Length: 495
Image 1 (cartoon, rainbow, N blue to C red):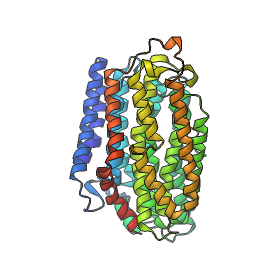
Image 2: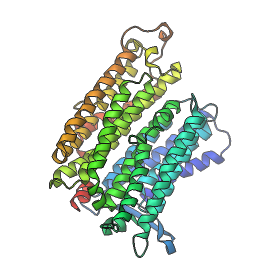
Image 3: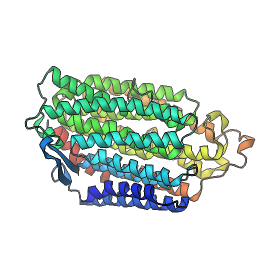
Image 4: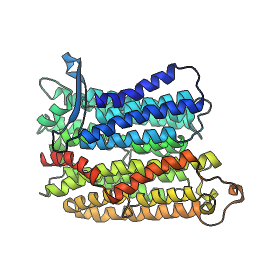
């Protein structure tokens, strides 16, 4: 019941807000934050009750839905899903508490955020393929309205492009899910059965097409180059908290989906195409970093770094799937690193997009050349941005280093030449973040920023929590690694 409460409470809260009379904005936000926090609490309880030495999937709830089709309400977690779901729930609490202009519609805004939290957690908690797809698709609806109604610039155009592009990926995913479903006799959507039986092993062209559809669908969601073009403008036009959720949670559905479906259910196919996937991931790493370096818009720069960092995640997954090196420990390390990268990217990039939202609330400007000299005016804002930027570029002692060290250690044992080339991405990332800090906080302070206010209580309170997570994972990551390694060892060792 713990997981059912975790995803059910936000949905119930969204329904209450949708049906409630007109509440004051402060009361609406407090209600939404309380509901989101209860959902987070359920996942924290599940974390403490999780047994790393126990079965792969734990806290399972199962209720038959359409027995004749093998469809059921099945939820449960392994260590990988629990880590990502808990991070996502934390980020939703942060996005709800963080100040934003709701354009006179706070009830609708927070209702959509709670709905999005429910269906997003459903993706990470589902153990039924059809249920997974339903949750995967519904998050598009909520994000479409959050961008289109509360965004700025050209929000409706950006929201439409986001929806159509990612919905196309979802349709590919649906075809692949049907292919997996039909490959078993008796037919079932139970992920545990599909992982155990590997039904498409040695199936030739049919299995290859199912694998291709899965990977394309998840590549669009991640996104990987060249199916990434929906992402930058969606970020630029979305409100800051929605951008934090888009980068911190929704992108993880692509990489998590790669681990949960093709990696776990089609081991033979993933191993066959691991090198090609790793090369595409390397392209995303270098392309994302280079294009981000050339951006003069704050949000576009951060958005392209997400493409870069998701490339590291996919590179780790590909290394874990490869069988060119008989080094199970290295492949397990790569998969653990890829999962840690998903968690820490959510915290780091979520913080950066919340910060960009604070800048927009004060200036309605994202152009970097319109800023400068803010270190003296806004020391709190400066400090949190510096911390997040250094964590993103992989500075030792911060969370980003833990993930990237594991990924590159694993990839070096499998594809050493890809590891050497991939290191260039870290170098370029360092350059683009140092340049960002220079333009925002140093040099001459423009006269229009002479009265620029520092972070308010709610802003620095939220960023403090995220910053603590970044530092704790960077200094003492054992609590997170123990949880993730419990599952990565089974998934990799089970080959």
